[in-house]
Image (cartoon, rainbow, N blue to C red; front, side, top):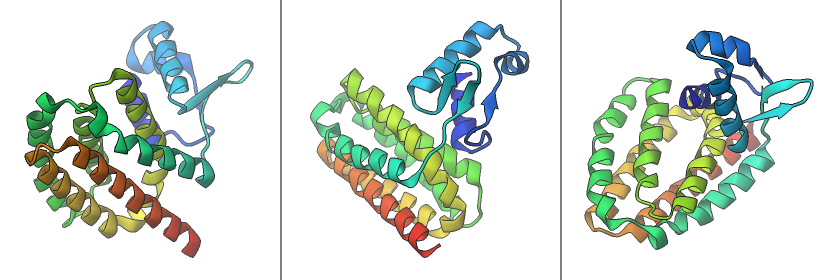
Length: 207
């Protein structure tokens, strides 16, 4: 349930400010309100919703300054991946990322927003699994989802650039993993996060 709700928020199926009603969600998922409440509490911790007395739980709003702050933190966090790396996981992550390449190549030919979203998720999980420190891994995961829902609002309008850069990121990550260089993995991710922020900033400035 948590993952489904999180994905709906990131895909903007739930818009900022939208009220998430426990009873309605419980009916949809055919569960009691307790697991729904637990899922919403986790989303609150992740910064994707907020719960206020007398109001209920709503999807949090975002602004570009907050988005930049999250990205600035993710830049530094990515540089730490190699310091807390799990070399024994490199082969599996390489296999997972290599499997994404033909799927991205298909996106270069036809738009599929949800597939783009899913590929980015799977890429994130493959990199996240390389982090051996549980605290760093949790923060890396949480800030990815905070940033992703803002970024996804622009993807459709920058489709060609975004799919091309995603393909390049996959290629470079595979190169680093084949070399067994987890520090390079972190810096590849750091660079592509920076590129992404620059593209969004440029898009906003030009309207």
